[in-house]
Length: 521
Image (cartoon, rainbow, N blue to C red; front, side):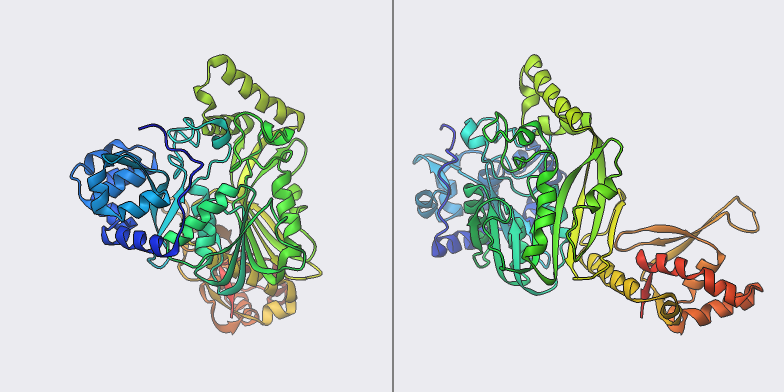
């Protein structure tokens, strides 16, 4: 059998897709079922695009093994085995399968995906493009495609998409917008806590894949619209939540605006110079947000010589919006170029051609005075505040996922700090956040520690150094006494002037509240 055409995508007929879903579930083709069948090592190997362990684990021919070979490993299977595993004739007619009377193969990748409360969902994407790995999008599935198809690749579940899903607030809201939906992962999550979901993408194939993902996962259909960024969303149409995993890669093809540039991939290259696409998305989001609404997105940003990246990205935030910008990783321009050259499969070109493409990336960065590229997330809240609070920080350390509740709490604390002067701060009551521990660092046998740290085991998992007063203050914050009364007691214990202690402590209290160690009662 030859290569399956990517132009023909399955048709999500409601009744037939429901029957296909029922057969997948009946066979145990779920995230839990895969782990049980394959075992942890083979299951983990799949995430690295290594298929040999899974091939060895699926030699028995059961319906579940057949489905794994069809949809995850993209192997041809005997037609009689496929017939025993799913509604065979309908899948052929609707385009989920292609082949002959003797042998069939899948036309798309169908990957079980566990929802946040145990839902059995499925992500539908292009063959060979479900996850990352050494091969990237230019690997087993992408490299074999004609250039016209390859430019319109639609990826499935990857690290970026799961990161965004994990940080997104999940409060029930009326309307959500997924900008650049791809295979529909964020729209799928949003369907669980919103009344209506709108999803946009410049790639019409992506919208068709998103429709397949939602239909096969058994959730209601979204309002799918073709267009770039907010173009399909008219002014005045407001949303309580906007999410986006945009095509944020800063590449020469995108910078030159060369839409037909060889190797350009729609899913990653936005066609704007530098990080202008992410800047535009942030700046335009306010006009599509309802009051109190949130916009959450992943982004890349340039580190320009002579500029502080925090000031540069903070300047993107539109008026009337609070923001939290977190840089999770930084790569120098050589690392960044190599990463995305491999993603496109350019490392398999001849040495001279690869060197020329690599040179083009470095030329582009040099022209823009870019020394490195940062990756992270940006959360905006339309607060309407006259004095918006914008925080930009670097935090490359492990965090707890899901993080949505911690992000909402961050903005609640920003409201409190903005509206509370020092007198009110000292009159307030606080409690120590859950699972905060104190660590003391010093030489063995020393009478006093050199450093005292408070460390969070939840949320951002921060650590901050405190002095004796700060440690004592945090230790007795259970919401019973006001901050001022606690400080008076500490002053009496240490023999300090209580007035002076009250004068110098509010900044420390603000820091502990800002970082989530102390919570206002």
